[in-house]
Image (cartoon, rainbow, N blue to C red; front, top):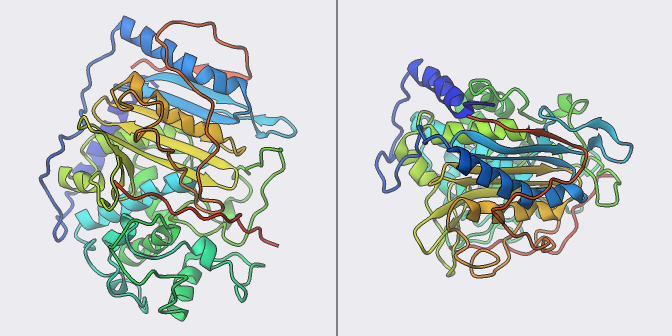
Length: 449
């Protein structure tokens, strides 16, 4: 794992050298944010010791609990903490989780869908300001643009709920095209569309299911193939893929807190909003590639990390595929959470400090969301508050089911002293080198018959 950031940078340099992408219509080239550093200073011995001790003290108690998954924390190209705990089948303790065990990323998948769309924008193959109807024939809402899909301001409600209706065959797997066709067949239906685009933030998985169709339309490739060709293969993300029916034999199931496995249901093959599987190591490659400045222009990245919703006061906002906290001291915390069935995921990125926190689990372990609190080890993000945004709860990004708040995690305090590490079934490795809130929907995820 030594020097992983430099490895990714060299790969992306090869990608760019093969042909400079054209500038798409209205693609910004200059903005206010400085590009991420690609040559962060090496950590000193005392810095390494402090970061490693604090990170271990933060996460080791989680490993002693019910957590079943993987964790990676890194700074300046150095992996400070990497742990794997549990089993692919936690009931029977079969197949230990390791560095190559791919987890369903749930809504963290949206980061790939968003950046794929922006890649096509940068190449001049689409314009995010275009109406969706330009790319998806029959789409009935001309005021909805690609950009409002990306930033969850389209006014479209969540397909997880409006597709769970009488008349929808739940005995077969639906596809993205089925979601689009349902929208086309039910125009001017308030259960599907609020009536107004770009009026307010509403987190909706429908947006990203449609973006996957646009990616397919513009690129001429199936969504799984486009992501593999554009990102996974060039970046060496060998354990990352988009789930399709052919992956049913290798994909890892998820579980209730009781240990009962979730069954496959009729919405499980819709992608774009979910269904990317990956590992903590591959996600760190993704993080470093985005920081390198080689995949995207500075202007495109600034657009991705800009806030678009300011109807309500607060630090929380949403960019183009990224959640963020806009801290009063001028810092931005870029992240995304995920939740689908028993899969709970966290992907946190501190651009100023070149620090990353990744936690993936598949046994409905809600406390995984507490991982974001470790941010203050690297920078002043919480501003003295126990929680972010002056004590407000931070929502999990649910792709389906109850989209409310997760159960508050146990209090986790960051210390900078060395503590004995607990014994657990863990593989340990160290490398060297505002506004919009999610609409609360109190409804259980439908189960396929």
